[in-house]
Image (cartoon, rainbow, N blue to C red; front, side):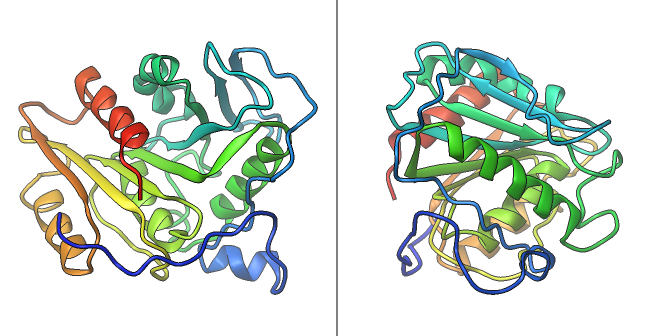
Length: 250
């Protein structure tokens, strides 16, 4: 990918002004990592955020996480008609190695994310904001290194939400995306796109090979990877993306 857009200053803490619902309808997330160290110890493991009833999500705290020491965090978005458990699975091993916190919410509609059902930002943005707000309050998170990862329709949502909230996310990783529908463009996140050349669900010629040039024309930099595979996230690609997140500073 090509050159960089002009970055905008990042901020800590919840932003004031405007109604939460109005911001959610515009795809905007309010939650921000807090500058103070949390006083709650969270052992390594997989947890339910406990904010949803039938559909909730997962928080993964990697082995080696040290409470009070700021860690990298990635929001992970699952594919269509899927859930947090399947969405987070490819990244658990690499996250352990890199000591990255993972937050994987379930979409509110079991079919897909809100830009697909009901067709506009709103329900999922509000829920993701609640989950992030809760976890930012008890986990020490590096505010200068935040990522959003996604697979398939989750990749489309990661691109859309990540570009709309580029003043929060520094990195956006999309695995087999189909489209992007940002409500606006903010900040200057680095972009990672990976796609299998034998993908028979989201044809690479009609998706990533068109999306990546659009991103380049808008001035976004990052990495584009094509691999010999189908509609999946191979282990080596998941590891590559996590390494990119850890190593590439923006």
